[in-house]
Length: 365
Image 1: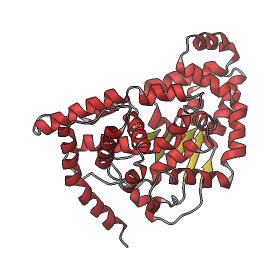
Image 2 (image 1 turned 180 degrees about the horizontal axis):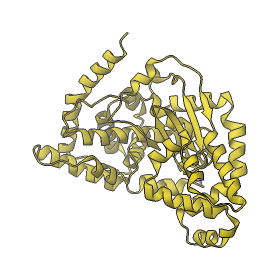
Image 3 (image 1 turned 90 degrees about the vertical axis):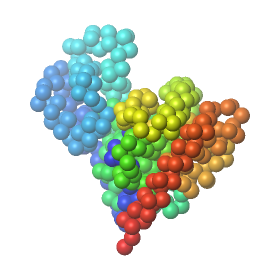
C-alpha cells in the first residue's frame, strides 16, 4: 500500500515517543453515507456537496495520496451514477463495460451493510489494535516492538487502498474488509509496519544518488511489509491470481532493468542518471511493492528472514541479501551482475554508517 514520506524520513523518530492511546476516526465514512443517502433520493451531486465531502480530513489526505485530478473527477461521476435511480441505465452500461471507477462505486453501494458492520464490530475493539501490532512484530526486529504514540487511524468509504504517513493511517473500507477475509488485521498490520520499521535518513546523500536510494528504500519498505498481507493473500484462492499478476509476474523484468541501470551507473559515474520518476514508472507506480514482495519472499523462502530483520534499516543490505537468497533458490530468480553488487556495496559503505550515526544522535537524550 501507499506510503507517504519524504526521502527516507527517519521513522526511528516515531519510536522515541512513549506509547499512548489509539484513535479510530470514521467521520469520512459517515459523511460518504450521508452524501449517498441524498443521491439515493435522486438528488444531484453538486459541487458544494462534493467539496464538503472532500474537505473531511481523512478524505483530503487519502485523495491527495491516491487520486490524480482526472481520476478523482471520473470517480466523482461514477459515485453519482452508482446511487441515483435516474442514472441506472448508465450504471448498468458502465458496469457491463467493466469501467473500474463504476465497478468500485457499485461495490460500495452494494456492500454498504457489510462495511458498516465492519466499522461497528471490528475496528472499535481494543483487541484489534493488539492484533495489528502483533502481526507487524513478526516482521520487525525486537528493538522495533513498540507502539506509535497517539496513533490516528481513519477509515474512508472511497477507493481500494491504504496510506501510511506521519499523521497516521488511512484505510479504504473495501481494502480493509477484503484483506480481513483471508486473515483478520493484515492490512492494518502492513501499514503500521511502515510506522514502526527503523529507517535511515539519506537526505545528506549526493543529489545524483538520491533517486536510486529512494527507489531501493521503497522496495525494502513495501517488500518486507508485503510479507504480512500479500503472503497470506497469495495462499487465498480468491486473491492469489491477482497477487501473482500484480506483484510477482513482472518482478523479474524489473530486477533485470534495475541491474542494467546499476551497471551503467557503475561504468559511467559522470553520465546523466535516471530521475525519480523513472524508478516510479519502473515499479508500475507501486512505490516498491514491485519488485519488493518478490525479493522479500525469495529471502524468506531461503530462511534468511532473521538476517533481513537485523538490517531492516539498510536498503542496500536488502538487495544484497536478495542476491544471496536468489543464488540458493532452485526456482532460479534473477541475480544481479557483479558490477551491480559492487555498486550496491559502494553505496552501503558511503551512506549507511553516517546515516546510522545521525539517527543515534537524534535519539540521544
